[in-house]
Length: 141
Image 1 (cartoon, rainbow, N blue to C red):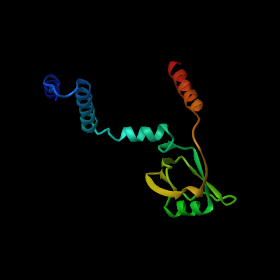
Image 2 (image 1 turned 180 degrees about the vertical axis):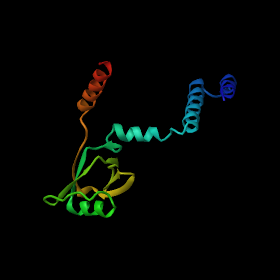
Image 3 (image 1 turned 120 degrees about the vertical axis):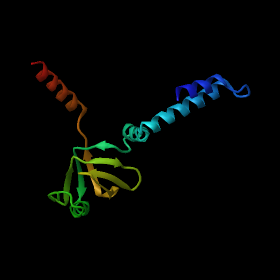
Image 4 (image 1 turned 45 degrees about the vertical axis):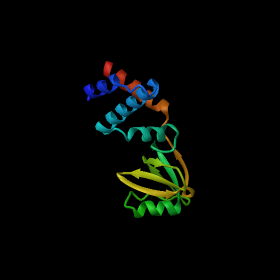
């Protein structure tokens, strides 16, 4: 692979601009590496996470009553319905684009209409850093 890329870099055609040629060659090598290590899926997953379109780890998702019934019918722990609402704990919102949320809970992936979700909460980032600090202090003791 390295020999082939070096050969391509050394025999650049004269009728192509260097910038375009080497940019294309580098992009091709990057694509090949990502495909060979089977990590190509990380790019769209990370984009979804950064822009909060999906891949959101939640503490709880507050659902309307009809969505609570749907979650119960899917075989997930039937949440307790209080005042026509329930909470789905520790779920992952895979995508929230469009009119439906795509959610994973206990290795079950399902959709819920956006208008059936009242709210959701995420773990606070300060909580994560305080847990790491506590683990470090325990390890040093």
